[in-house]
Image (cartoon, rainbow, N blue to C red; front, side):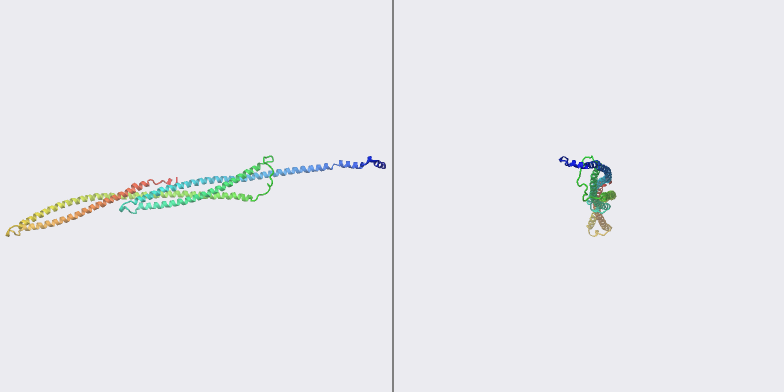
Length: 412
């Protein structure tokens, strides 16, 4: 049989290139064996398991990243909210301090009025006349008031400088807060947007190099510490500002109280001085009236003395004429009898009386001149007192009636 086959196979060119049945069977067995199907089934199983694992892993990673992004957004939002409250607080503090600054400037402007009043009162009192130019209680209180006002203005200027410096600190703290809040706001928007991104979201695309860490990035601790430092700066600024406002309020209240208290002292001293000067003026007026009365009395006495002197002079002339006539008696008739001696005695007595009257007349004339001089002196003193009363009462007290109230002195 095999030989026949060999014969067939080798029979002519017709059988060239034909394989054997065994090869054909072997080929069919190889084709029907199905190794690729098994491999395919195994690969499909592995691939399905891989897909499930990858999908589960990617979903878990996506969920974890989303949760972390949401947590980060909440963290950022927490500090952003803290910054917002801090900005509101420091804005309120800046407004309060600015209001106090304006109040202080108003108080400084109002303090110029008491200063003008005190200086003008001192200037007016420099026009007092002669003996009333004394360093009295009102003068002392006015000098004290001037010194007090100068000290208060110095304190006001110093506190104003402190307030303006504190305003710069507050504004700087607010700028830091606003800058950090602005950064937190943008970061919160980015993180919120990131947490809401999905595979089907718009603008999702490949970003080459996105996994690279940027240089200069902060870590969580330094990031949080930066905001804490900014908030500490704000707290220190607010605490200092509040303390300064309390100090400024105390300065304004104490200054107004001291000025009003000194104003009361000055007014009291002026009123007492006016009353004292009025009493002296009244006494001087009474003294003037009495002096005028005495001048009239002296003039009346002078007139009487002159009349008596004239009478005595006439009587002396009569006595002397009588003596001359007696001396004309002839010879023995010209004797020293009683009437002659009486006439001589009369002339002597009249001359003594004349001397006495003339002396009294001179003394009365001198007294009258002294009374007239005293009258002039008293009248001058009355003028001086009236001038002092006018200055203290009509000018100084009138000026001091425009002294500012405690509210205005506090800057309200």
